[in-house]
Image 1 (tube, rainbow, N blue to C red):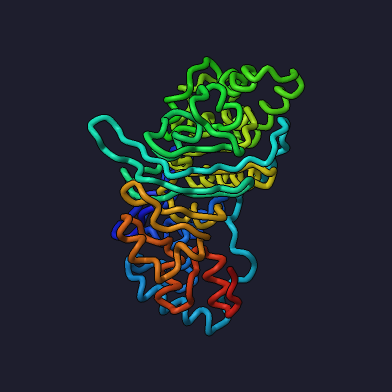
Image 2 (cartoon, rainbow, N blue to C red):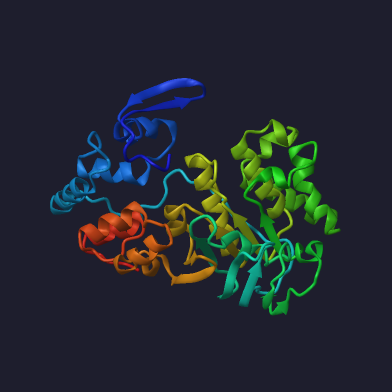
Length: 369
């Protein structure tokens, strides 16, 4: 659940049965979701702490006032306030890649009809960084990342991966270095079983059989699909098909992993799993670039955020910098709103608090960047 404000009632289902029905702040609260192994959405978690979970979640003034009282009473939780129940994911590289970054040098791209989707974009992504690219539809996000593996070619400017120009190198050659998981998984699924789908990519790399096995098993385990290896991909639900498309790319162990809207259609556990994969993959020395509309996911899981508007980069920095109160007008001009933790932190005069961890630390008087 991403949008809660303005919804008077909601129904919670678990394995086909109704679990609870009522106000979102109650139905999606820790008392109901906790026994199911789920965590509340950030807005509901804050409302519970503020004592306003049963009220209108749109009233952020009341929420801020309740949090102020919680801080005075010493009720703000400690610790990292990291996602609860996240799966354990670790990635051990099998293929040997040198540290691989990405450079975008003044890239211009025009579609048929003269629509200029990119207007001289410049961007440098160092090896091992987790970069989220955000912006409204049509801002140029997907157009930009499709240049990284040759799906699109610039009309002007240059793209370099690992210091080498992409140039006219074929997509199948670039795919050895840059793995791309599409927004719509049905654009890349074609095999008859989940395992065959995951095995296809590393098979084309002609790796040693033992290396292929390690990658296939690691990809299935990381995405939670090991128990579905014999299932036809199109017998999976949409969220699992999305994870399968990601598994197929992970199994190639690319130096640069590009994810286009990875959390679309995912439930809470799916979002947590994808976030854990992003962090584990980057921890293994790989570069991760994601296009996303999910501001909370971007703030929580990425080192750096780039905001695009009409084919240009208008903000570039850490989540603390991009979601700072003084950037709100620029975000609004790009059709974006900061995560709820950032909005509440701004109302309380706490500075930049893009995640629950930042907000809780600031409420306790322990500012952190």
